[in-house]
Length: 80
Figure 1: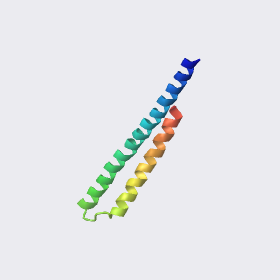
Figure 2: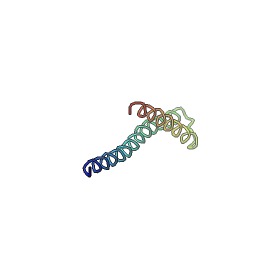
Figure 3: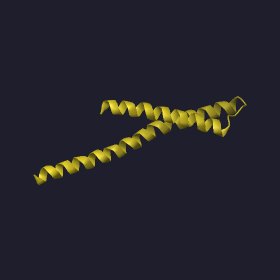
């Protein structure tokens, strides 16, 4: 009986640890492409001679990151 309780506690600890890893993974999945595409947008704006304001770049980056975080978390929830 003690052993079963210990196993249950260990499995809950692993699930909590797994959730932290998923959150870190989701954050990386959302931020890396958002930073990349925001950088591309800034470079294109500079190349054509009309650079975008920092507020515009921040808004675009936040929108991309939010979309990716939401979409990937929905996919992960469906898989689990």
